[in-house]
Length: 189
Image 1 (tube, rainbow, N blue to C red):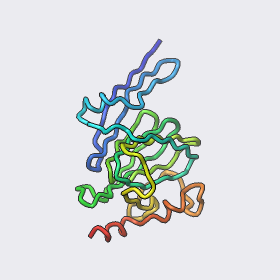
Image 2 (cartoon, one colour):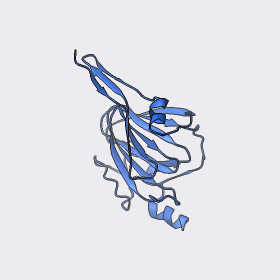
Image 3 (cartoon, rainbow, N blue to C red):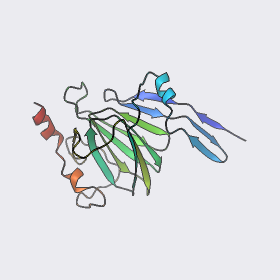
Image 4 (cartoon, rainbow, N blue to C red):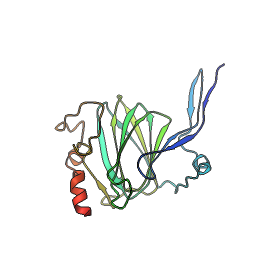
C-alpha cells in the first residue's frame, strides 16, 4: 500500500503579511486526509493566530465571483471541495504593499492567511466549489472594513473564466457596484 505525505509549509505572498499555506495531507489508496487547521503547525513557523470567532462555508457554481471584501478581521480561507481562483488586494492605506494584487490557485489543501484590511475574493472554477472562511471575529452588518469591485480595470485581476457583469447569478449587485480602487485612493489622500 503506497502512502504519500505532504507536510505543512508556508510561503509569504507579495502582499505584506499575506501567507499561502499548504496543509499536512496523507494520501493512500482509499483517499486523502487533510488537516483543515492545526494551530501548532502555524505556531511552529512563527505565525500566531487569534482563536476563530466564526467559520463559514459558501457553495458556488462555476464562474461565480465573490468579493473583494476587506473587513477589519484576519481570515484563513481555503477550498473544502472544488477549485477556485483566489484574488487579494491590499486596501490598507499605510501598508507598504497598498494596492498590490495577488492571485493564487486554490484547491483542497491550499490556504491563504489574509490580514485584516486586505480584500479577499474568488472565482469558482468548478461546480459546487465550497469555499471556507475562518474569521478571528464574528461578522456583523456594518462592521469596519472596505471593499472594491472585483471588475476594476485598474486592478486588472486576471479572472480565468468569462464574466457577465449583468448576471446576478455570477456576481452580486453589491460587489459589482463597490467602489473602484481609484475612488478608495482618493479618499485616502
